[in-house]
Length: 291
Image 1 (cartoon, rainbow, N blue to C red):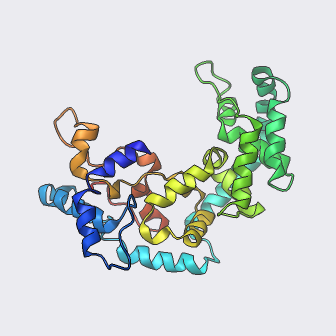
Image 2 (cartoon, helix red, strand yellow):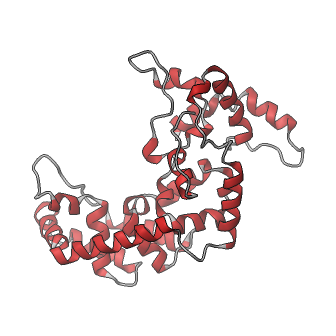
């Protein structure tokens, strides 16, 4: 994004040029590519000014774990971590509850009144086309992605509106890309991802895939490794930010400071930032976000 490029501009100036000069001439730095070899110099300057704001789970301290986990992903994980298994069990329970409680039926009925007849069913049919014709799964995905399930469960409050559905063609384009594009997701992989985190997969997943890989830890950017990581943790498609690669000294200029005059300790993009998620993907505890 433009904002991400702005955050990185300072670090990619003289620092990138210097790093490129020092690099192996056969492996020059790629313009615009986020590199820890460049970012760590920014982090070093920040640490020299504010050493108390550096935690123990940074890209620098986690390099051995990142390398080891990449090797596991490269050969394919046949087993699931306890966290992944627990997530899948919880998703299955929530799906069963939504079906048995009538929430999905009520969501469809409400959509007819608000969106008009046929809009919901057309979207369900589009999703089902790519998940083996499972219409119940498609109803659940649709209700979760656009807030209809939560809205029904809250007894349709007037202060909260579910999101309107996009054109049917968007579903076809997104799901076709997921099945036929570089991720080449199987039917079961796609169904699991849509239950776990539906909206990123239904809204321009090609753009999110490019953004997520571009700022993921470098060891995980290989297409095969990234695909395996996504297969285990579908949420990584929505991680399109990484404040470990931005310059902390630029935050005051770009983001301002707190009312106390203190500088921000991260970029404030935690909901979509690799920084807050990376340790947990390797079963490590996050030690703050002071970078």
